[in-house]
Image 1 (spheres, rainbow, N blue to C red):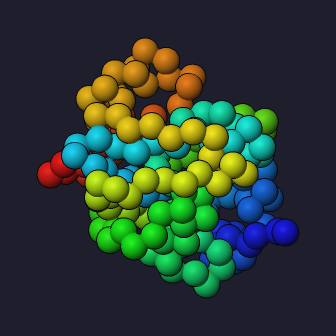
Image 2 (image 1 turned 120 degrees about the horizontal axis):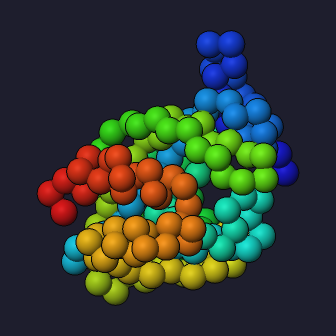
Image 3 (image 1 turned 135 degrees about the vertical axis):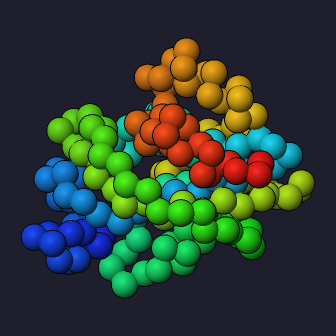
Length: 173
């Protein structure tokens, strides 16, 4: 199934097939979610079947809204689809933009709405094996140190978030 995502083409927002947007490096909308519990960040390891960055560690959830889907609805939908997480209250933090080579000739040029939520004790992810191969909780300081030591194990966007936007994302946490 081809998914069309909101993409700027010649200055106009248009629906473009997701793979094409990445092949052409087009600027497009995206969503990133960071779930926290007791100061730890929930990470996911991307499934090996993903068409880019398989097996790399990423933030809790990241995706692209479908055409005419709100960023919040998208974030809620993908938390459920990828991790079986429902009923978490998300807070919009801000919108950031980045451009990153994700390998295989693909470019993520994203305008990302970032959401943060708190997962309560007893709520555990239930991984969709088509999307996620593992999950882990990490204290932010530990995560930053691990990314510094072995950046090749982490997605380019997670490295960008930690290097350039950590204060925005984790402010007050």
